Image (cartoon, rainbow, N blue to C red):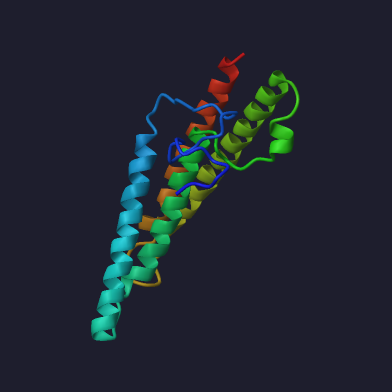
Length: 175
């Protein structure tokens, strides 16, 4: 079904023609497949927990803790994909106005700020991982080592910073 003002031949996913499709060297299928796997795990865990709760009036203790962890991983992986595709949030009034040179300079500045931010997050979160490991912190729900969860923040933050660096470089080449 389509609306009267829309042509019926449009593809399912319509992209804004003013935003060029990004083609980074490292394939985006990595983030896409990780997102699919994490979403599938979340759905499976939640569905299983609902069934167990329905039939036994009990629930698995680990599901909430693990689901929160997976949602954080999903947000970071999707953030990496959005940076690589140049689909991150921005104020279009500023980013899309002015000359092409100004737009490119603002795009590069934005990408550079993402690099700085996520590099800072990666470096600072390494201390958290180290502290969790050194002091033997355990997770509150199931008691596994906390660093099993916190080690992913610097890893995924580095991935986002690298994707933003790639975007910065690609924007510099388009002169």
